[in-house]
Image (cartoon, rainbow, N blue to C red):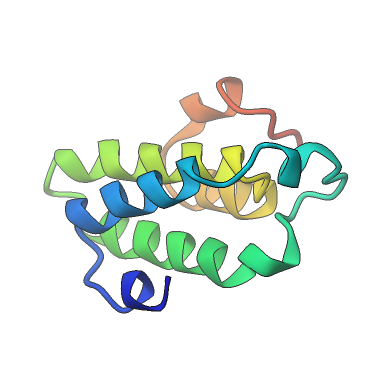
Length: 104
């Protein structure tokens, strides 16, 4: 995890984050009743948010939107809904509100 969080915010980093998040057991998130993920994943959630911010700043590259969408999806999957909602609000990705259980 530490190596992952010290890599450049690019497509490879996003793919690695997706693979790591896919390995987390689903029962970890079954009892999450807040808009934040489990405390043990707070640094990972923050890393995803920072990566998305960095990618969205370079919005001239059309691939970055897809990468940010992937990050929002991962945040939703690990129940970091507060970060996902903030990202959707800050970036022009209103269409994602209907695809994730993010209610204000």
